[in-house]
Image 1: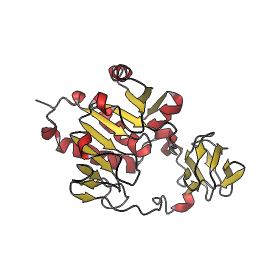
Image 2 (image 1 turned 135 degrees about the vertical axis):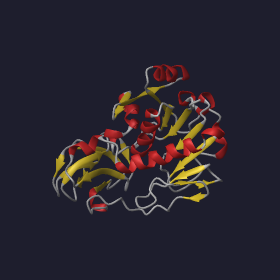
Image 3 (image 1 turned 30 degrees about the vertical axis):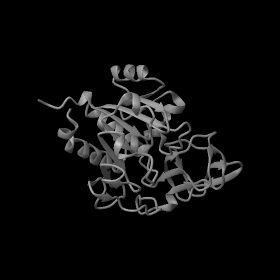
Image 4 (image 1 turned 120 degrees about the vertical axis):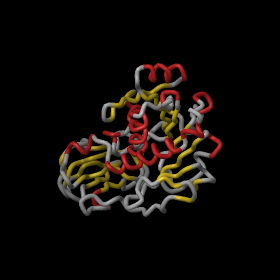
Length: 271
């Protein structure tokens, strides 16, 4: 008999680009998904981030819709409509109610302590900060390169390099950074073409210029409070506007690793 994946509840912690790519793939595989997010997420690639449902009530990514909910009853209503319920729940306390079989920690916090082995029958951590067999059952590699998407059952992912992944040969120059702590204000929208030197945003009057020309693949939401040094935007020098609204190859590779870890554990999960 085929596994009843519709009975497999998976809780994804985080609603940013990587977490959304994971949630999207598992939802497409007929698993019952729920997402938890913080009250004021700072997703840069908002065009492909279910975290936007925190602000907009709902968010559709590549044909899959997530809706903000506040109760178990609302979550079940979302599932009945083939949507993903998203809770504003930084500590993922809703796991005590939903009782997920699988928890995927995709907060990309790069530190341990958010999720524990005892939180679910299968706990998966994405990227550095987790140790398989100690913090979580499995870790999925998130660094670009030969091992991207690899499932690790003993040990850790590669350490955080602190550098953005290269796109068409550009690394740090394609990223916009917040110059100081304050309130963020964007002058351009996701999908816009920008030129090197153009002022695309500001924080309390201090300008943020583009360091190269390309398509604005992501930018923070205006009006939110930001901390100095965090990522504020993402410029894609390839100039393909469609990339701004599609799940990236990196996200899909990581999602594939998470799916592999779940399917590898199907017999142990007793579904």
